[in-house]
Image 1: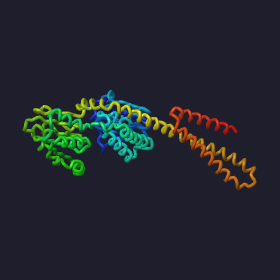
Image 2: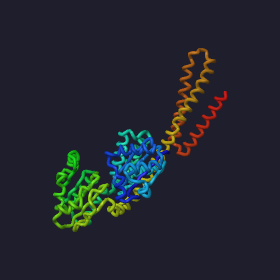
Image 3: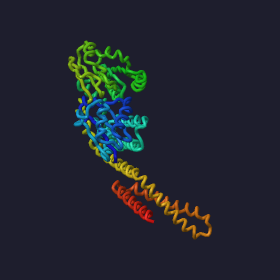
Image 4: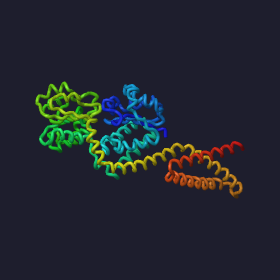
Length: 419
C-alpha cells in the first residue's frame, strides 16, 4: 500500500534514548517537512509522545526515511538502529489503529494517546503535509479508536500514567491525607495527577510557565492554589509529593537547586512524567527522597494491563475489521484511473451503437435522446456493480477484479488499434 511507519517506543528503547527523538508540538511541522523532503514521501504525519516518536509516510523510501527521522533530531542512525521498528502496508495500518485505541500504550486503553494522535494529524494537515491518503488513514484510526473504546469498554477500566504515579506516591508515603503536593505543568497527565492528589486529601499547589496555561488549568482544577513558576523552589521544602510533566527541553527541578531549597528532612516523592525528563534523577541522593520517571512506573502499568486482557481481545477484533475496510478503500483508490478508462471505453461503444441506431431511426433528432438513455443505463449498471464489489469483496477479490478489468480494457484497445 506504499504506507510505512518508522519509530521508537517504550517497548524498544529506554527513556534516555526516547528523549533524544522527542519532538514538541511546535517543532513537529518543521521536522515532518524535513523528513518528507529527505525520504521522497508525498505525505506524512509525525507523532511524538512521552512513550513514542513515530513518522507515518506515504510513498517514501524506507532507508531514506529512517535516516531522515534520526537526522531531524540530530542523532546518528547507527546509534538508534537497534531501537527502531518499521511496519509497512497493512501492518502499518493495523499498528496505527492499535496505537490510537490505546492497545499499544504503556497503560493499555488510556485515552491520552487518542488526543495526541488527533493533534499530530491536525498539525500535519495545517502544514499541508497530510493529503488524501494520510487524512483517510488517520480519520479512520480515530473513528476506530472511539468506537472500539465505546463498544468494548476498554477505557472504563483504564488507569492513566498520572493515576499510577499517585499510586506510587501512596505506596511510598502511605496515606496522602493532609500532605502537600507541588505540580509543575498543565499537561493532561499533570491535570490527572493533580485531580488524584487532591482527591486523596492533599493540599496541592500548581505552577505553569504561561498565563494562558494558568487560566486553562484554573478552569480544570479550581481547588488547586497557583504559584508563580519562578518561585516553584520556594515551595519545595514543604512538599511531600512533587510532580512535573512539561514539554520543556530542560529540567524544571534540578538536583543542585533542590538541595539548596530543601531544609526539612522527611519522606518525599518526586514523580517525573515528562519526556524529555523534567526532574534531575540525582535528586534521589537527597535524604529520604524517592524518584520515579515514566519508565519506572512500568511495573504498576503491567499489573493494570492484565486486568484488561479480555477487553483488549474484543478491541483487536474491532480493529481488524476496520483495517480490512481501509485496505479495500486503498485498493479501489489505486484503480480509480482504470475505472475512468473503462467508463470512457464503454461510452465510446455506446456512441457507436447510438449512431447505428440513429441511422435506422426516422428522425435524426432522436440521436441525443437515445445517447442519454443508453449512457444513463450504462452508468447505473457500473455504479451498482462497483458498489457491490467494494462492499462485499475482500482485498484479494478486488485485486483479481481490477486485474481482469485491466486485461479486458487492454485487449479492447489492442483490437481497436488494429482496425
